[in-house]
Image (cartoon, rainbow, N blue to C red; front, side, top):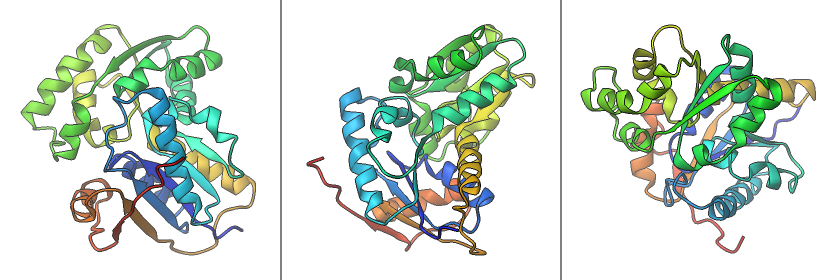
Length: 271
């Protein structure tokens, strides 16, 4: 048994979809969440900058004596996380590994789609992970930069005409390519899964990176007898910009109010 908290970070709000999944599958765990809202989004940054930001995020979380850290950010998970993970004495999880495994297992025709930020799509991380598991796979990728701001503006309803129009533009080429599996390569995207599914059609399986990662972490902690024995854990939220704005928006991701439980912090810039 290990009662230490789990650390989770993202460039903003999207990682809260992973937090929600973690709370669902491991309700007894304490979670420390860091949203680097002062520097969001990471998706348009250089690889070097993304790695530097990730190190700063992890350093902050480690100040809480965490037992594991989750990079609940598709951009970080596909841009250098593996090369820095070994620098830490605790397990470091990204969302790409579990999602790649789930996609390789789910596809029937070997055609796998991936949507994400520009940085995630530029990276070959998903391609390498999937092809290692399923060498015959064909991977079709599309950057969807407008999805994150739409989600953070609350435009997530299946009846939102702007969201549907943007989704049609992004997803039609993937649908026409005949993919039967689509990785939601950004943790914001589960909130628009209904619209994505409507555009892609009923025969396409959607892979939720946050959900797959939460289950992988649960299995890992259970295997090393590191799960908490509490009945109910708690979550603390830290941001690098407005705590009030984050608190209001977070309810969209968590289906619960967190206003008053959010603190603003400054990250160490020297790392």
